[in-house]
Image 1 (tube, rainbow, N blue to C red):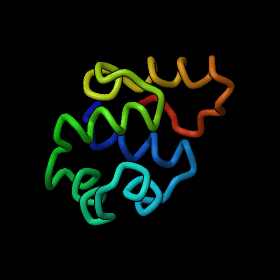
Image 2 (cartoon, one colour):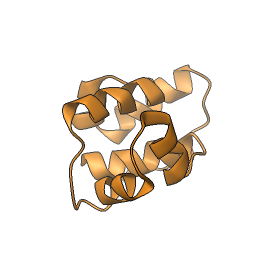
Image 3 (cartoon, helix red, strand yellow):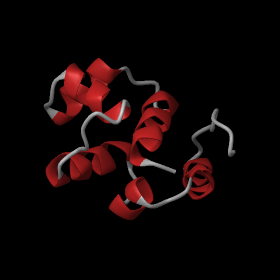
Image 4 (spheres, rainbow, N blue to C red):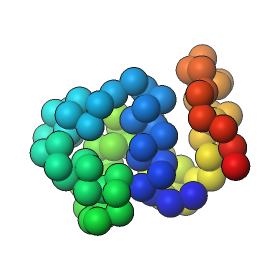
Length: 85
């Protein structure tokens, strides 16, 4: 799964808007939109902030598949609303 898709899934899973994410990691809403649409890619500092925000490792965010992330979220008691393709 690509980072762009993971960013969208995680943001929605946590019930956040692009503006919410932008405010929490100190970037613009347009920046978050560009990441999610694959126009640009988060820099390493932004990736770390996103990992901290969502409670996932950099490996999970960049390389992890959705099934692995789903299991980790379920263990934390977070209901998963996205499906594994």
